[in-house]
Amino acid sequence: MAIVLFSRPNHDVTLGYLFHYSKDLIKISREKGHDTINKEGKSANKSTILSIIKKKKPKLIMLNGHGSPKIVCGQNNEILVNSEDNPEILSQTITYSLSCSSALELGKIAVEKGAICFIGYEWDFAIGKDPESEATPARDKIAKLFLDPSNILFSSLIKGNNVENSIGKAKKKMWENIWYLNTTKEFPEAPHYAPFLFGNYSGLIAHGNKKAIVN
Image: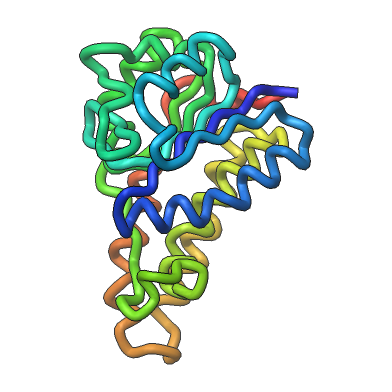
């Protein structure tokens, strides 16, 4: 079984949603028998995360955090990986970066520096939220439409499906949710959210070996 690393900062509302939703992925990873390393909150810092990657050499990594075309951050927006500084740290990994726009530049360079595959978003990753549920992400039915596809992608990787198939499953769910937002009568503002979810759909991309699997 593989070593799977989770970096799960939790210092603002948006990251609180990612933090909540990724709990299930940790459980799935452990149930599948992977050596699962979860670093959350203050432990999702540069020193800790990079030390684990260097010493443990995980095959699969999930990086939750804020980002930009060149970077992915950890707790308190400390930069973990920078395309101009240390992209080679992701060498020999399949990395899923759940952050804004990090696939645009960092993903490409990470693969050039030896990453097996870098999965992420070429522009901002949007999360629609119900303002009345921000304190309790589990009750936010709007956010679920945005984050379930992400969980489908990473859980598929954990279960041994290849990158291409895992992305396909996520995009299928995104498309179903976009259709729902454009057609439902359950809440009048639903169509407002659809373009943001479509942005996630069109921005999701993988660089590197799309046939790669975790084993």
